[in-house]
Amino acid sequence: MKTAAIVLFILTYASLLVFPKIRAYAALTSAAIFVIIGILPVGKVFFAVDWNVILMIAGSMGVVSLFIDSKMPELLADKIIDKMPDVKWAIISLSLFAGIISAFVDNVATVLMVAPVALTIAKKLKISPVPSIIAIAVASNLQGAATLVGDTTSILLGGYAHLDFLDFFFFQGKPGMFWVVQAGAVTSTLVLLYMFRKQNQLISPMKDASVQDYFPTWLLGAMVGMLILASFIPGKIAITNGLICVGLFAVGLIRQYFIKKDHKLTLKAIKEIDYYTILLLAGLFVVIGGITEVGLVEDISRIFVGIGKDNLFVIFTLVVWASVFFSAFIDNIPYVATMLPVVAGIAGIMNIDPNILFFGLLTGATLGGNLTPIGASANIAALGILRKEGYQVSTWEFMKIGVPFTMAAVITGYVMIWFIWH
Image 1 (cartoon, rainbow, N blue to C red):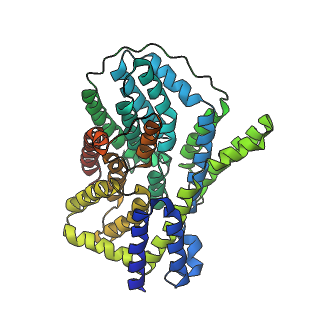
Image 2: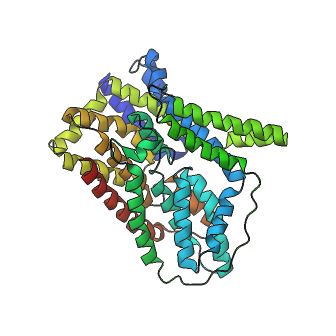
């Protein structure tokens, strides 16, 4: 069975790499084969899927879609731009604003919200929007690791390691991932300031966007607040966070329907949920359950320990920088989903607290996507926006910003996590 599991696992990942447009179907097909040939017993399939993660992703995406439609993000961006003296500070402020939004909203959605503001500025000043939109994309990816709901990878880690919203701020009496990410944001922002130092064109005030409905803003705030409160509930059910997110989305949908009496708007909000990612994760959870069942995860963990020769610093370094490398070329969602049980296995073999490796994995995998234009969905979305405007961005043009930004943020996070958690 183990040989069959290895072959099937390799074929699954190969198909995810070679056929990115059908990743979800490849994962679901592989999951079905794992069950049909008996690698994972039918009775364990339901429990292999992390339903808290699935519900959190669906609910938070739904709430975010209502938030975007309200035009509140556009208004906030316009207010920020009105305070900026020139292009350089406009780019920096938009990247920081995108980062703040991205700590609570999906990275791709953040880019779609903020990029139009950068385009408007570029058109007014008759300059290229390419640098500013790349800066917005990489800043969005960076802050995705800051909170429990900032990115799918964070939700995956929270579900696997049983972390609550506040654990990303302070955990076991020590600074959590939020502060690590903010330190990385400081160093990477200094890099952007240096790169855009010559962009001194003046900016005239922009007309503020009109917010259509303030309720989604309160709904998003309620989601964050309720996730915080849930952190203090002892012995809560495993899907508490997921139920909060889905429940608030349902409240938003019901209110929208009774106010606007238009079922098409309700269906539009439901369609905004990324079902493709949800199906991909469901399939991967079953595949990972299968390779765990036959002991393959433990075998991979022992390989890491063997390479690191039981040296925690070497293994930590390997986890961080291997994650940076792989995430530059493959989607970090399947990578993190697969590596979480591996990292836990490494910690079990070495008899150590796994948190240093968990946080190292999240740092490397989330930020590594900024190295290349195909490393993160937000980057692909940003380049798609530019392409529609007639700008073809080369890999080298993207990497001129992405590489120094990523290296500054990852090195900062790598050093901080080691000194805080080892």
